[in-house]
Length: 352
Image (cartoon, rainbow, N blue to C red):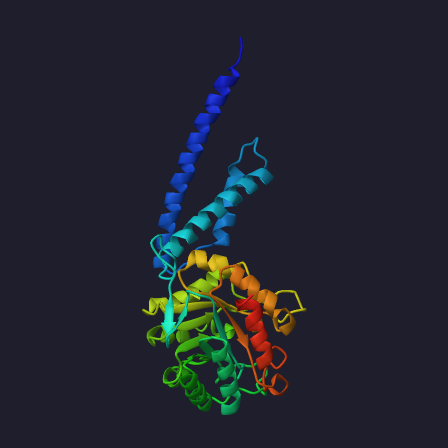
């Protein structure tokens, strides 16, 4: 008596493949329902305890010939697929997620646009005086830049470092920006500063330390002005996008996303610029993306190639710090360019 032929065995395998496919799709439908229940009850999407429990049940009921190790590998892939499916469903409903019909967002402030041609955002780390700020703004206007950045409230690692001039710095920024027809970009550290900053700033900046300050993000979402949101130095891109969602959820979709470097094991630079973040953010959202090469590197000698890399990856602009006399700056003096260096940077990055 002969056994089944090769064609018959293959036909059985094909049939099982179809059943496996149907079961996997059926499982994903259930996973989608689980996600909806979890979101309504504020449960986290990923539950390692539940995953371990399912694996234990499968191992106990396994009769072979599948080995325990192979069983774990197969179902780990199934569980990963399910989690990806849940997270993809969540991302599709975000306001900040790029829809199939969405075009790139262009944000225009004081006649200057972000999201079209590449822009230079430049200014001192901290506003120290009218003369200092005026000199930088004059050079920025000469170079064709439209966005003047400057810190009024400075978050510093040491509580004894210079913390900024506060409201007087905002007044200086506004006065100088109006003189040279520039847009003011300044950081807001605290919900209590929003009202004061709104009187002088054109674009609110959220620094790396405040990306997780959700109350501040909510308030800025209600303030009606563009927000330049910097990625947290330990944040994943998923966390970064969800921080932007806090702003958009309040009705403000004038958002500029800023990659400013993340913390890694590398010590030759201040941070590590994640160039891959630029195309990924552009794929996931319709918002302008800029790269802060000053904080991202902390080194003036490599800012030009990093800025070129950022623009080549699709960034809509680069941000740098500049000061008339960097050696005398009250903060971040090592990474601030002088005005001639700023002009050379602009020529090398935007004109070559």
